[in-house]
Image (tube, rainbow over all chains, first blue to last red):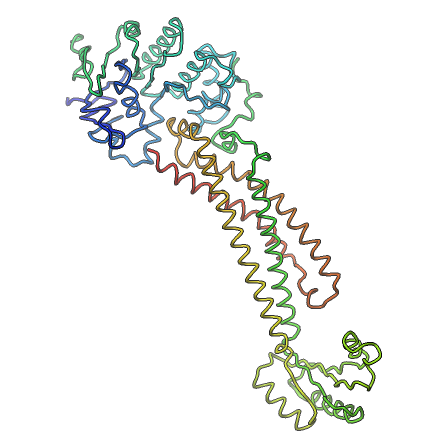
Length: 241
Length: 306
């Protein structure tokens, strides 16, 4: 079996630069496997958000190759990308909730994009809001929600369509430690359902909260592999073997 | 709280109500009013163009085949004799459909505004005898020349003119006004497109975050364009209805005022059912144009995103 044959994401010598500046990511190569839980760490400015932008298809790399869901992303036409994006859930660092929509409507957005009917989406959206503990805030607009509540709405929106990959940028950055642990448990629950989770964080204490997680560390745009997560086969499988 | 169907009944979605994805203060915003003014002006220009077209068509139909014979003779008795001969000559021809001697009283009434009540109809100012003739088929230059030669041989003091000839400058003026009306409609349409383009660009800018979120969640260009298209379509429909009401109101008022003139030429400009249908189509065309412009503008802008 070749490296990446059963992978969900594969980066091969990927580089990214904005305009004519120096590369913010250089020679990034790694493989993500279905159902795994990854932390992406690094100091502020290390390139975590840029890496996540490549993962949730907000940017194309300036060099290298990316395969996702078994397909070469670089050669995909632009109009094929929405289908890829619908398989990826994203929790943005600044939540990016739509301000004039209620919590329900923000969470329902990915389902509406896929064309689900109003009657079909009522239950899953209500259940999801209950799952994140916001069933009492269903009609609240983002401006009336606390930071932690907004974060949970953002997470609910990211996972409502059962994405194959969940990408979260500093998802616990605006919540208290108890809520941070609770949110991680949500990610773990989703991970147990088969979703590959990638959480970017600079909080090293968080890494210990998810024992089975794999760590990718970015330092000035290059990737190191402290747990062997990037090797093929990953260390977890070597240990199992 | 699960499945609050009543609360969610009017929730926005990517179907008929997707325009609600964008926050809008519809009537408070300028777009419906801009479109209303454009549609009102377009309705008035279109109505003017159609009325002028009707005036020209009716006048042409009325004077097609029409010729006027004048007996220019100062002596009343000789004038009457020659007029009778001309009537006999014209009535006997196969290509003449109708012949009518314009009664002296009618002639006097026509001339009264220029000659005054006392002079008109009196022999103090001799006026020619007028005969209105309708030929079968159009009056060509050759046909007119032949008829003139034959008539003058019988009635030496006869002058013959095609009615279309002396109305030609009027038709030219009407044609110029029609071109002007079409030009106005085109200019107004172009201005409307520019206004919608600016509005769509402005809406794109002010809703950039919302668009990016929908884009990142997997919304396609078509879905995002639909949101703008529907939103601007609703504005255009509101503006179009208001503009149509305003424009039709103005056309009615102007129509009544022109109708009161009592001129046969102006009366020929009355709008028919087909004209009203065409005028009613102006706001529909405006809405379609606005939606198409919005769609193309938004898709053009989205293509610059990944």
